[in-house]
Image (tube, rainbow, N blue to C red):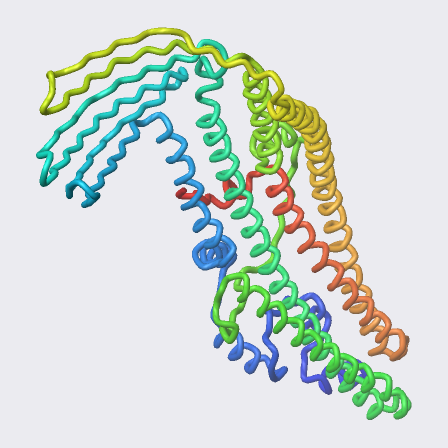
Length: 487
């Protein structure tokens, strides 16, 4: 039996198995005993969670999203109030009291319902009716009732649908901005959950890498013992291999701790019990995504919530400026009305009709001028901010596209480096088996393999996260995950 066969027998593996051992994938493992059966049992005890399920849980239970939807209750009522501005406004005022003076004692009751209406053209209509009666012990009863109708149509200040309907239009724009803010909140939350889920995946894979490295280190100790037993290695050289086992045990403990921290972070984002034994069930895989920068920019300008909110803010500022300019005009209104009154005992009904013009000219009031100046400054400042937002959006889109492209190239390089590191270690192990290498060289290549595995994993997670970040930048996160706001 030659030394190489003796080495393979010492490892308890066939020769082909040793040659391919470095290339065999190992399933993710959980912190616990390092035997394969124990690792499989520990993973089976976990709560398996796919990424789509994590997003669904986050949309249902995430506290940030729940708070945003609660705020939407008040925001939608604000819009209803703005619409109610042009609905008939009704009120009733009533009073009943008893009075006494030096000459008599009496009881008095009043009832005064009223209605008013504002039209989108600035016309104001009001209809009032009043009724009161007095019952005196000495003077007897008296009754009065009457109605009045007043119509006021602005001719200068406040005239026309643009100014009169400005509060409603502002409320509608505010509602659009609120919906965009909700969309941005949901998209940010989804992206955060995706990132935390992938951090858990990274921690699981790092645990697998550390476990694999420990297994190989222990096998290498057995290789050293077989070589020592065959007289092909000095006994003291096994110290290097045993020291590597200790290092890998230390790295394994660190990986377990990182896995626990990543699990807690995801559980908190999902608003789940922190004691839940969560396990990310998906395997990290990537496929190349090609994005045209010009198309991406056009899509971002049409969908990106933060940019669209800035566009709405600019529109609101321009409308405020129009209202402020309108406030500089004279208040000239056409006024008409009619009233009817009746009193008993008395001479019957009295009617009155009128029609005329009403003019108010501000002379020393600087507050309107102040509002105009502030509105003009707000418009100018909004244009600067909009230009800045547009440029920032262009930069963010260009960066996201570039990061995605670079990430794919880095992933390809990392995968190639990993394949070469595995091949290099395999060759060096074969050389050691025939006495043409040393422990130091094999351990050095083993360290290179671990670094290549970690680099490939980091590049893979970074590329997947770059796709999520691009979705967030373009405002397409909800579309990509088929999420409806249901608002």
